Image 1 (cartoon, one colour):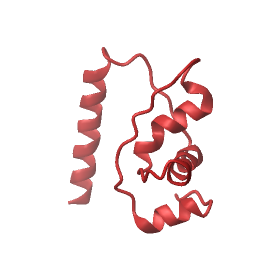
Image 2 (tube, helix red, strand yellow):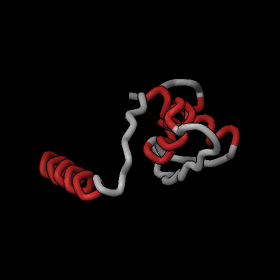
Image 3 (spheres, helix red, strand yellow):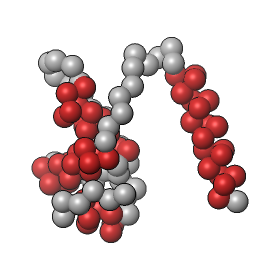
Length: 95
């Protein structure tokens, strides 16, 4: 059952990526440590709890992928495991 869900998720992601190609100018890969740092920054400075995927726009902008000038980051999702959030806030990068 888990494998079926994983395969459906992969197929859905591939379909969405293909459909969005004409709307997206590019994509950036962000290392896990930078995503964790963005979650930590949002929680400690802005008092916003975001899951890892929700903090990726900030992580990308902080790593210099936002271009020059002002950058707007849409941060979403607060669906993060409390133990994982605690680990991130203590400076760890969960796997």
